[in-house]
Each structure stands twice: as structure tokens, then as C-alpha cells.
Image: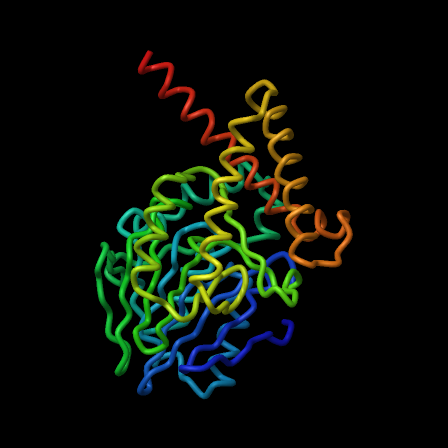
Length: 324
């Protein structure tokens, strides 16, 4: 097992690299307060031994972990939930009501992902999805609050990236754990101009209108920090949110302007359009990576974003056809 990579942040928050795909791509978080702890997101089942090592390094017994809180059930965020819960005897799973059933019975998640990746690749990427006993699951509707030591965590229903997505506001740090709802910001793209941020339209529930409304709700909390899954902490969210909204609009414009036939051809055209925009935008941001290096770093994201936008287009077209 590789040594876990983690970063200690203020307010008893630890950012842990889940080692998904590459270092610096995906994180989860450990929060501590008054002898209690919680994980927000888990990575895949391959991440779990590293999370247990971080607990040991922090002097936290497994029995002290009170909550496991995945932001949503996409497998880079929640694939390790069952395996982690099996190691934490007193932990309760807190999850969006739409996501709970997939953690109690992950067979549909596994079947869907295996169909996309193939069984061998699925095992390599995600490992086993272990069910969670439903008696250990709490559904967290909008406004649900949990107490962790002397800090309160507020769960917010945040559709846009996915309908089963929650963000978690931590009053102590004035920060929000946003999963994918505040987009992606990889540290490789940081410059003197600060972080670079963009949306992510992973299949299959991308909804740009709902996403803009969600961002309104998050910014109404006046957060001081955003804790991203992809990747780590960013600050000055009021400056970043405008860029995030611009990318969200660009994504939809790129999809709507695609001329190719629906399906693989249009998906490829959308991906090409996103890459062209991204290379240009990063150059303006002051990044020094070559177009080839940018495409290599963003290859998986671009593919998933294009697939998600194609699904979104098809749903729009089906709705228009029915209305007509």
C-alpha cells in the first residue's frame, strides 16, 4: 500500500488524496471535533486502507468516526463507502435521499459501471462495492443537520451536477464541501492569477439551470473556503464563482452548437470543442502547459463531460419532440 498523501488544513480538516487515476485528481476529507470525526467522500474501495492509515496517523480510533458523508454516489466519491463503513463500528452513513438506496444495494451502480468499463477495468478502477446495512443509513434532505463534537454540519440539496448531490456547510470553517458542485480546480493549473476552475458535466443528470440556482444558494452562505473533491481547498469563492458560471454556459453553448449526428460523432465534436476552449482559456490564465499536456491531464474529464452533454442534448431533443 502506498503511503497516504494528505494535507492538514486549518479548522481540524485534513485533505486526503484518494489516489484515483493519478495524484492530485481526487480528494476526500477528514473532519475532527472534540474526539469525534467524520469523512466527507471516500474515494474508491482501494482508498480505504489509506484512510485507515490517516486515522492512525492522526491518533483517531476507528470507533471515534461518527459519520461517513458522501456528497453523491458517483464512484470516485462513494465507491469506497461500504468498505470504509465495515472498518468503522460506530459510523452512520449520511447521504442524499436519492442516493441511499444505491449504498444499501449497490448492484445497479456496479452493473452500470461494469457495462461502461468492462468487468476487469471496473475492478481495477473501483474494486468491490460493499452494501451498507440500512440500519446504519440516515437520509439527509435539504437542511438536515448533524452534530460532530462542537461543530454543526449542514446538508444542502444541490442539483446540477447530479440530482442525488448534497454539499456540506461547516459553520466553524465557514467552508463548504462541494463534491463536484463547485466544479474542478486542479492545482497543476494554478498561476499568479490564482486557481483555474471549470464545471463538470459527467453523465447522466447534468442540469445547467438547476446548477446556476444551486450556486446562488451556496454563495448566499458567504463561504470563505470551498473544499473540492477535485482538488483540495480553494479560497475567495466569490471571485471563482463567476468563472465557474462562465464555463457552465460555455459547456451548454458548445453542446448546442454541435452539428454532427447524435451519438458518438456529436460526442466527439463536443469533446473537441471543449478541449479547444480549455487550451485557450488556460493560456489566458497564464498556464504554461502545452496543448498536449493539457489534454493528457484532462483526458478523462473531457470524455465524461462530452458524454454528459450528449445525454443532456438527447433529453432536450426528446422533450421537444414530445412537446411538438
